[in-house]
Amino acid sequence: MPAAPYNGLILDFGGVLTTRMRTNGEAFERSEGLPPGAYFHALDEHPEGVEVYAALEVGEATQDDWNVTIGRLLGIDPTNLMGRALAALRPEGLIVDAAQRAREAGVKVALLSNSFGLRPYNPYEALGMGEDRFDAYILSEREGVRKPAPLIYQRALEKLDLRAEECVFVDDHVKNLPPAEALGIRTIHHTTDPAATAAALESLLANRTTT
Picture 1 (cartoon, rainbow, N blue to C red):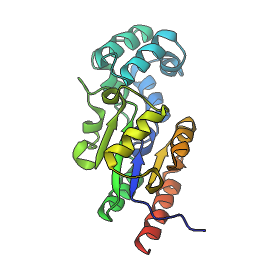
Picture 2: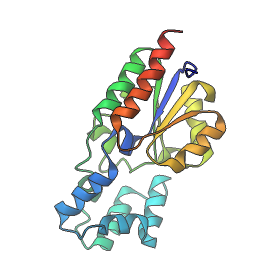
Picture 3: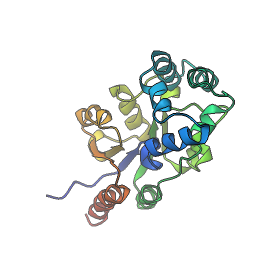
Protein backbone atom coordinates (compact mmCIF):
# COMPACT_ATOMS: atom_id res chain seq x y z
CA MET A 1 0.00 0.00 0.00
CA PRO A 2 1.58 3.34 -0.99
CA ALA A 3 2.42 5.88 1.68
CA ALA A 4 -0.02 8.73 2.16
CA PRO A 5 0.97 12.09 0.70
CA TYR A 6 3.15 14.21 2.92
CA ASN A 7 3.54 17.96 3.32
CA GLY A 8 6.48 18.21 5.72
CA LEU A 9 10.00 16.79 5.70
CA ILE A 10 12.10 17.03 8.87
CA LEU A 11 15.80 16.28 8.43
CA ASP A 12 18.61 15.72 10.89
CA PHE A 13 21.82 17.59 10.07
CA GLY A 14 24.92 15.61 11.07
CA GLY A 15 24.97 12.24 9.31
CA VAL A 16 21.85 12.87 7.20
CA LEU A 17 22.21 16.19 5.40
CA THR A 18 25.94 15.68 5.79
CA THR A 19 28.35 12.82 5.26
CA ARG A 20 28.81 10.34 8.09
CA MET A 21 29.83 11.69 11.48
CA ARG A 22 31.94 8.59 12.16
CA THR A 23 33.97 9.10 9.00
CA ASN A 24 34.45 12.75 9.88
CA GLY A 25 35.60 11.91 13.40
CA GLU A 26 38.11 9.37 12.13
CA ALA A 27 39.51 11.98 9.74
CA PHE A 28 39.82 14.42 12.65
CA GLU A 29 41.75 11.88 14.71
CA ARG A 30 44.20 11.38 11.85
CA SER A 31 44.62 15.11 11.26
CA GLU A 32 45.39 15.74 14.95
CA GLY A 33 47.62 12.70 15.37
CA LEU A 34 45.27 11.13 17.92
CA PRO A 35 45.06 7.39 18.62
CA PRO A 36 42.12 5.71 16.86
CA GLY A 37 39.00 6.00 18.99
CA ALA A 38 40.34 8.74 21.27
CA TYR A 39 37.96 11.42 20.01
CA PHE A 40 34.92 9.17 20.27
CA HIS A 41 35.91 8.12 23.77
CA ALA A 42 36.14 11.76 24.85
CA LEU A 43 32.71 12.55 23.41
CA ASP A 44 30.76 9.42 24.24
CA GLU A 45 32.39 7.84 27.29
CA HIS A 46 34.42 10.30 29.34
CA PRO A 47 32.07 11.82 31.97
CA GLU A 48 33.32 15.37 31.42
CA GLY A 49 33.04 15.05 27.66
CA VAL A 50 29.55 13.63 27.82
CA GLU A 51 28.49 16.35 30.26
CA VAL A 52 29.81 19.30 28.27
CA TYR A 53 28.38 17.99 25.00
CA ALA A 54 24.94 17.51 26.55
CA ALA A 55 25.13 21.02 28.02
CA LEU A 56 26.20 22.50 24.67
CA GLU A 57 23.26 20.86 22.92
CA VAL A 58 20.71 22.57 25.16
CA GLY A 59 22.43 25.95 25.37
CA GLU A 60 23.79 25.52 28.89
CA ALA A 61 27.41 25.55 27.70
CA THR A 62 29.09 27.51 24.93
CA GLN A 63 31.06 26.12 22.03
CA ASP A 64 34.14 27.63 23.66
CA ASP A 65 33.37 25.61 26.82
CA TRP A 66 33.23 22.49 24.65
CA ASN A 67 36.47 23.42 22.89
CA VAL A 68 38.33 23.88 26.15
CA THR A 69 37.00 20.70 27.80
CA ILE A 70 37.47 18.39 24.81
CA GLY A 71 40.85 19.95 24.01
CA ARG A 72 42.02 19.26 27.55
CA LEU A 73 40.74 15.67 27.49
CA LEU A 74 42.54 15.02 24.20
CA GLY A 75 45.65 17.03 25.07
CA ILE A 76 45.36 19.27 21.99
CA ASP A 77 44.98 22.97 21.25
CA PRO A 78 41.38 24.05 21.96
CA THR A 79 41.45 26.96 19.48
CA ASN A 80 38.44 26.60 17.13
CA LEU A 81 38.35 22.93 18.07
CA MET A 82 34.77 22.43 16.88
CA GLY A 83 35.70 23.87 13.50
CA ARG A 84 38.67 21.52 13.26
CA ALA A 85 36.64 18.57 14.52
CA LEU A 86 34.03 19.04 11.79
CA ALA A 87 36.45 20.02 9.01
CA ALA A 88 35.98 16.79 7.03
CA LEU A 89 32.19 16.99 7.09
CA ARG A 90 30.56 17.60 3.70
CA PRO A 91 26.99 18.00 2.45
CA GLU A 92 25.42 14.66 1.49
CA GLY A 93 24.48 15.58 -2.06
CA LEU A 94 21.80 12.97 -2.66
CA ILE A 95 19.88 13.94 0.46
CA VAL A 96 20.34 17.68 -0.05
CA ASP A 97 19.09 17.36 -3.63
CA ALA A 98 16.09 15.24 -2.57
CA ALA A 99 15.17 17.84 0.05
CA GLN A 100 15.43 20.63 -2.49
CA ARG A 101 13.18 18.80 -4.94
CA ALA A 102 10.65 18.21 -2.18
CA ARG A 103 10.67 21.89 -1.29
CA GLU A 104 10.24 22.88 -4.94
CA ALA A 105 7.21 20.58 -5.06
CA GLY A 106 5.59 22.41 -2.15
CA VAL A 107 6.73 20.28 0.77
CA LYS A 108 7.83 22.28 3.83
CA VAL A 109 11.35 21.25 4.80
CA ALA A 110 12.80 21.61 8.30
CA LEU A 111 16.26 21.10 9.75
CA LEU A 112 16.16 19.53 13.23
CA SER A 113 19.54 19.24 14.90
CA ASN A 114 21.05 18.60 18.28
CA SER A 115 23.27 21.65 18.12
CA PHE A 116 27.04 21.84 17.74
CA GLY A 117 26.92 25.48 18.81
CA LEU A 118 26.91 28.47 16.49
CA ARG A 119 29.88 30.54 17.69
CA PRO A 120 32.72 30.88 16.93
CA TYR A 121 32.16 28.17 14.31
CA ASN A 122 28.76 27.75 12.64
CA PRO A 123 28.76 24.35 10.91
CA TYR A 124 25.36 24.93 9.31
CA GLU A 125 26.45 28.11 7.55
CA ALA A 126 29.84 26.58 6.73
CA LEU A 127 28.16 23.78 4.80
CA GLY A 128 25.67 26.04 3.04
CA MET A 129 22.72 25.04 5.21
CA GLY A 130 21.69 28.33 6.77
CA GLU A 131 18.18 29.24 7.76
CA ASP A 132 17.29 30.58 4.32
CA ARG A 133 17.49 27.04 2.91
CA PHE A 134 14.65 25.74 5.09
CA ASP A 135 11.06 26.51 6.00
CA ALA A 136 11.74 25.79 9.66
CA TYR A 137 14.97 25.64 11.63
CA ILE A 138 15.01 23.81 14.94
CA LEU A 139 18.28 23.79 16.88
CA SER A 140 18.33 22.19 20.31
CA GLU A 141 20.41 24.97 21.87
CA ARG A 142 17.71 27.50 20.98
CA GLU A 143 14.88 25.27 22.15
CA GLY A 144 16.55 24.21 25.41
CA VAL A 145 15.70 20.59 24.65
CA ARG A 146 17.36 17.94 22.51
CA LYS A 147 16.46 14.77 20.67
CA PRO A 148 15.06 12.31 21.59
CA ALA A 149 12.85 14.37 23.93
CA PRO A 150 9.31 14.46 22.43
CA LEU A 151 9.07 18.21 22.97
CA ILE A 152 11.60 19.04 20.26
CA TYR A 153 9.54 17.16 17.65
CA GLN A 154 6.45 19.03 18.79
CA ARG A 155 8.35 22.28 18.32
CA ALA A 156 9.22 21.21 14.77
CA LEU A 157 5.55 20.57 13.99
CA GLU A 158 4.59 23.95 15.43
CA LYS A 159 7.19 25.76 13.33
CA LEU A 160 6.07 23.93 10.20
CA ASP A 161 2.41 24.49 11.10
CA LEU A 162 1.63 20.91 10.12
CA ARG A 163 0.07 17.86 11.75
CA ALA A 164 2.32 14.96 12.68
CA GLU A 165 0.58 12.71 10.16
CA GLU A 166 1.64 15.05 7.35
CA CYS A 167 5.35 14.81 8.17
CA VAL A 168 8.31 12.51 7.63
CA PHE A 169 11.40 12.59 9.86
CA VAL A 170 14.83 11.28 8.83
CA ASP A 171 17.60 10.57 11.34
CA ASP A 172 20.68 8.36 11.43
CA HIS A 173 20.29 7.46 15.12
CA VAL A 174 17.56 4.89 15.61
CA LYS A 175 16.96 6.05 19.21
CA ASN A 176 15.67 9.36 17.86
CA LEU A 177 12.87 7.78 15.83
CA PRO A 178 10.39 6.28 18.36
CA PRO A 179 9.42 9.62 20.00
CA ALA A 180 8.60 11.05 16.57
CA GLU A 181 6.64 7.92 15.66
CA ALA A 182 4.70 8.17 18.92
CA LEU A 183 3.48 11.59 17.82
CA GLY A 184 2.33 10.19 14.49
CA ILE A 185 5.29 11.31 12.36
CA ARG A 186 6.47 8.80 9.78
CA THR A 187 10.18 8.05 10.09
CA ILE A 188 13.05 6.91 7.93
CA HIS A 189 16.21 5.49 9.49
CA HIS A 190 19.11 6.80 7.42
CA THR A 191 21.95 4.27 7.49
CA THR A 192 25.13 4.23 5.44
CA ASP A 193 23.34 4.29 2.09
CA PRO A 194 22.25 7.82 1.10
CA ALA A 195 20.94 6.50 -2.21
CA ALA A 196 18.39 4.34 -0.37
CA THR A 197 17.22 7.24 1.78
CA ALA A 198 16.99 9.55 -1.22
CA ALA A 199 14.99 6.91 -3.09
CA ALA A 200 12.57 6.59 -0.17
CA LEU A 201 12.04 10.35 -0.18
CA GLU A 202 11.60 10.40 -3.94
CA SER A 203 8.98 7.65 -3.64
CA LEU A 204 7.01 9.71 -1.14
CA LEU A 205 7.32 12.76 -3.37
CA ALA A 206 6.15 10.84 -6.44
CA ASN A 207 3.14 9.60 -4.51
CA ARG A 208 2.36 13.13 -3.38
CA THR A 209 2.51 14.64 -6.84
CA THR A 210 0.23 12.04 -8.39
CA THR A 211 -2.57 12.28 -5.86
